[in-house]
Length: 357
Figure (cartoon, rainbow, N blue to C red):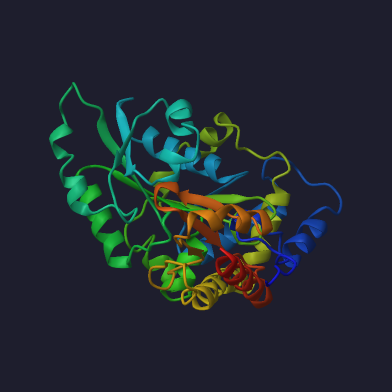
């Protein structure tokens, strides 16, 4: 009987579990020299704002935050605040992170309702927004005000640029604003073309009003950026960030992290590697008897179904999360620091456990 090898050096639970890239660590250490004014009035933060303006090719406004939930709250609160009256809701899918994985933070912090629409692929369609038009102007119904989409989605799927543009066109026609939760926007950018033009095409050029630009899942210690893509969208955002406890005092340390990965577009390279490792994991496991996989992954997530008796021992050996327990489906995530050896060892362990089972 074969025995399991030592587990991979890096698990497949989440890209949140990965360490920080050496360039990020070096940038934080460099930013630690001397003192700097607090709350963003420092050279590192000014540089970061300039880098984001260059990245999007426009006069965007960037607000750094501590984490993804905070970034979503800042973005949504600011956009909602730009609408007349305290009567607006946020439209999203029933897979949306803001609806499923933030402990009700948007409802509690924003005192708003989430209209979570069913979606088998975690993507909204323009016709779903059109179907909400009957709510508008009716005093008995909350008024749809902001559309929140996720790119890449919680299911590892991707909107095309045309799909985002069509959503934005429909939303704006209904008087709604569009927020893009970009916790893994780097992975989406890498998958859809891998250039700054790719990013711009699916955000500012498509009509998106605000983007949360993820960093923590892509090599940073812990920092996110909310990027408002027009001056009108950004009005009040600096006050909102403070109100929802996302204003960093020593902001230079968050800014330095982004400066490191925006240099020479390291952020795209890191995400591209994570995506490639997911493709490699799919390649090495899709032929193993007992591993039920869909087609190759679009980004850095794989969602296999496994025999139920194998899941617990495999997870005890190398940790990952359940996904849909009714189908015995799990989620395997790769990250910027996943290696081919990690993937090979993990695939070997899967094959051994399935042969034993």
